[in-house]
Length: 318
Image (cartoon, rainbow, N blue to C red; front, side, top):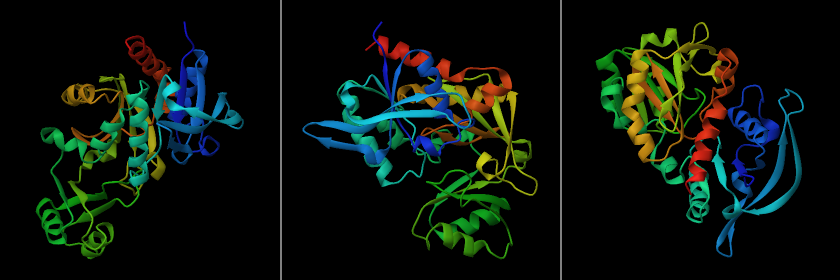
């Protein structure tokens, strides 16, 4: 069997936390299978003479907290010679990210499998993609209009407001009807009314955790990671101090997954993280979903193996 060549577009591997990093978990499994691995970042890519090339580093990984990788000499790697590329660059979802998807699309057009599909990464904004399933969402408003946003907060009493391109709990605020700083906060995160944001009904079930459910080719992993906010906080983000506690999927969780699965398959979004609070979807993460390491360790899983099994099936059909 031909050796599979994998390239991972990610943040600098020297900056990751290997015991937490899902991209790293994928690379460990790929190496175990004998795949050849290269890593590069968005600014390492360029288009020249009809092809997309990356200044990439052949990478060896080891499951160590202190000495987790080894990079060989950087080489110019034509991405059309790669079997599969994992797009694992963390947000923000800015113009550089979008330009990177266009370059990856050129590699895809040359026959390289790119996960997740570049055009679908552009289509599926992690906040707005959930609007395709309004019956599965809490009451939601997307607007840049301060008056409209204020009226929404007054109507539902307590709301969470957040930018459409953030991550890790940054610039997320809980606003309550009658609060003194509502207009100040809205002006700040809408950039004086010039930038769309999302306002959602505050769900008190957040005290039980913001559940991350991972889906591989539309099929949910059997366990979710409930991210319990730190005391005095309402944000269920690990980066904001939340504690991750694994739990089996509920019937409602599986129902929510079943509602989004057909669109995930249609858009070739092979690895997705669904965020659920109580009975409702709050986000559908497609750029660089996390929580593999936490779920693997709590339930003796190998989620990366499940993913790579699906990748190998896809490659065999090409």
